[in-house]
Length: 289
Image (cartoon, rainbow, N blue to C red; front, side, top):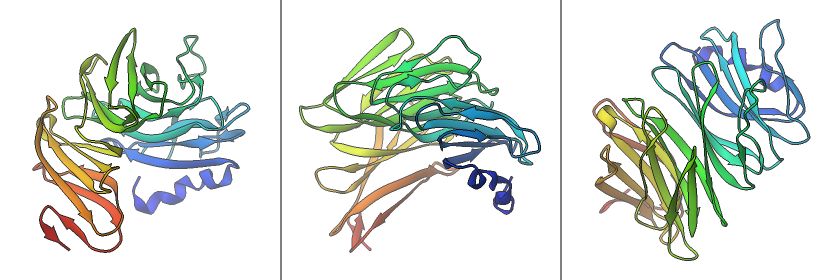
């Protein structure tokens, strides 16, 4: 599916209460869509039907279509009307990562499974699914204050990365194990976590300065790039990191007006590209533009 085939997704507009906010493709051309819906919707864009219900509140959905727009599978995450889905990523092997926020509910997208993974109110979550949409791992990021899981990515070896921000203290629960991150009182810090292919923790860390909103990209041989906005200065902080989480370089984008980060990407030479919005004059490092 390419930009000329967007009409294949017209079914989303024909379904009351359904909207999508993230769409990615894999190496085989399959399309993955994540969003929210309310009520009962048909997720098969072809002549057949695949109905899912949100229950009493808004639910998140994950949908996989083939390269011609044909239905492969779909799943729903139920909870409350405040639930949201933030990001989705697909590995070279077709495994899927989804992140968002859940205000209580079921984090298993397969209604046939008997084992439920439930999030507490306001927890961030990261789901690792196999290529058939079956849940492999459910991770929650929670604590007494604000926290979130905003971005996800696979690196070139299939390792899992996810990041977001938290206030004061947060607990990252991975299976039966949990790990605590702390920040100074009444502050919000960005964090980044790396898991191996099996879902076991490799490392987790804060990114060194107060900030929020987080974008993430991976490159060759486990290379990592992140961006987040500073709550103190309003600038964008870009960091290039090694596979073990050490900062190789850091760059600041600021100016005399508001600067907000959006997306970040790396090319085959591990050059870093960042997008965002601004007004006034901005500077990158010591240069003004």
